Image (cartoon, rainbow, N blue to C red):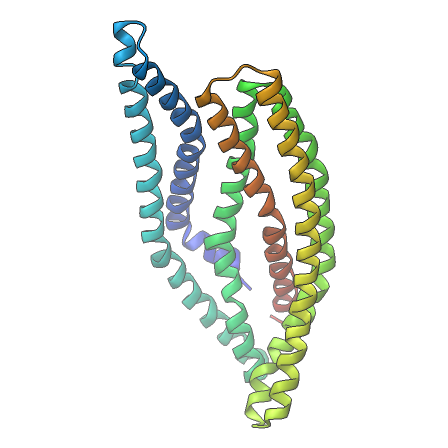
Length: 290
């Protein structure tokens, strides 16, 4: 499986998409600060103490609108370019699987199943890697931004994120075997259909459904524990922001926005780990015979 050669071949398109991902998410992480600044500026405008207070909102408004347009524009352009880059990659990848599989005499049903499963490679590069970059920017950006408001807030986030990451790694290890069993079943699907026996179709899809249920069970447990831990973060941060610090309304908005960014980004880690585990099994499966 020459995935790296395909990535190298389409490196220009992938690099452009990656650049747009970075621009989009850096702009996104700046928005809460700029919007909080805008809120405070509008409050000054409503109760002006000096002449400059009447126009205090203009500069923050320009900065916020510009950042919003950069975020939206880069996001729209990225979504426009992605299909043009990654669908061509998928076509070439499937062709490569077919040619290599035919040379070593793999059964056509297995080849068809692997051709379908190989979509996960392209999905990982097209969606998971950009999403991973988004979460890295979001988590690190939120922690850095919160440091400027109160270092204790960012410290709480950092302390909590360590056990959450460890928990996600353990979740991935438990899911990887289930993913492997699921891929085994999927490779048999086309052969089962060729036998034209509905009972066998029912059996194999029922067994696949049970495996997916087990994966979902691990995901639910991990999600529940993670939400409890994140609740602790919220309570600590709200206590620091409201009781210990004399923040303006705009600052409180920014802190809450960054906190939500941190929470939603951390929640995404298990899904990313699951996708990585699935891809790891596929790589071992394809490389063993190809």
